[in-house]
Every structure is written in C-alpha cells, then in structure tokens.
Amino acid sequence: MPVTLTATLLAAADPRPVQVVLNGTTAGQEYRVFGTSTDGASWDVPGGTGVSEGTQVLLIDNRSALNTPITYQAVVDGASYAASPVTVEHDGVAVLQTIDGLIVVGVEVASVTEPRSASPRSAEFEIAGREAPAARLDVPGSYTYEWELETEAVDSATMRSILRTGMPIVRRLVPGMRDLDTVVIGLVKAWKDELITAGGDTWRRWTLTVRELADPQPSTPLIAFTWDDFDAAMADRVWGGGALNFDGLFTTWDDFDTADWSLL
Image: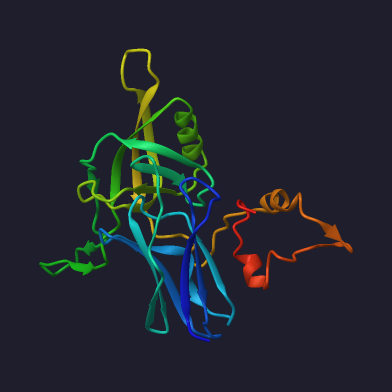
C-alpha cells in the first residue's frame, strides 16, 4: 500500500481545525508530520512525531497559520510526502488560544515591534593560577517576547480565562505582519492589562511576557470531537437490533474515525 497524506478542513471550531491523515506506513517506520505556510513558517502537527504501528495515523492540527495556503508534509524513513494545500480562514488577523485549542479568542495586534530577548546558557569558572577562565558552553535559550494584544467586551473575558488556565498558549497570525512568526507556542510569565481610553468603550490592551516553547507533548495527538459531538450527530439515526445502523454512512472503520461529526 503506498504512503499517502491527506489534509481536510473540519467544521468543529472557528478557526477550523485541519484533519491530517497518514496512510500506508508499515510497523516500525519513523514519521514526522508538519505544516508549512507560504511565508516559509513551519510547525509540527501535534502527535505527528512517532513510530508507526502499521495502522492509519490520524492527527488534528489546530495551530496553523491563518488565511494562507498550508501544505502538510510527512517524512517517513527519510522519504517526503505532501498533501494538497488547505487554507484555514479567519475573519481577523490573529488568535490566541490554549495549547489544546479548546479556548480560543480573536485578538488585534496592538504593536508589531515585538521586543524580544534571549540569553546565553554558558558559564565561566575562574581557576587559580590561570589567567583565562574555564568555560562550559551550551546553545542559547529561546526568545522571551513582549506581546501587545487588544480585545473587546466578551473577548476580554475569554482572554482572561486563557491566561488563568496556566497552560502554554499559541499565537496564530496571518502572514505578512512584518517578520513576525505566524505560529508561536509559549509560556506566559507575566501579564498586565488596561482599558485603552478614558471613554465609554471596552477595548482592553494586554501586555504579555511570553517565553517561547517547543511542543511539550510532541507525540500526543489532539482531538477535534468528543462523545457529545457523536451523540448529537447520531441522535436522529435509526437504532435496531441493539446497535446503531451505520448503513450508508461508513464503509470502513477508517471512514468512521475520520468523519466530520459536526456535519453529520
């Protein structure tokens, strides 16, 4: 069976998540699945790093760049495979979300100067009788960013709930905002917020100090649907003989696994 990779937009949320399906791998093959956008940005798909068990690999990506064609690629034992591009459309220019994608808020980017800092992780040690110190060298640390984002009304409450989870966050942008990275995973170290005018509106500006992270669980796939979604989709279907009648809906269990339950 040839190796194939497909990408499909689901209707489970806004912005829409992408279902990425890798078929045709054999047990023991190593694989990595990632997305790229037209501006050259690249990010790993959650759960997309692993060793095949010889079955279908079903992944959900809810961390993609916005409003740009996305090409998903899989590298399987050194060979590359690509899916047809898809575009995750969104009315705004940016969203902030928890890393699991369950809480999402649309935001305005108040500043595109994006101050950032990084520090070396090397150390020097003075040694008696030597003029120069001994050194222990390491790669530098990741960036710490200062983000300024704005929300209004109910979105401010959603932003607050995201920050109060204590979970890592994901910032997703449309490409073309200077050289800002379109997808960043980070840990919020501090934040402050204020109403931005003395008038009667409810626009609130958030200043976030964020340390960039790699995916803390790169081998853990995300979900797009729950059993509640299944129950809602199948509520009007015919039951018979003690089992749900799937006739006309699914040919194989793979079809069942990849169903868009928000549309059934």
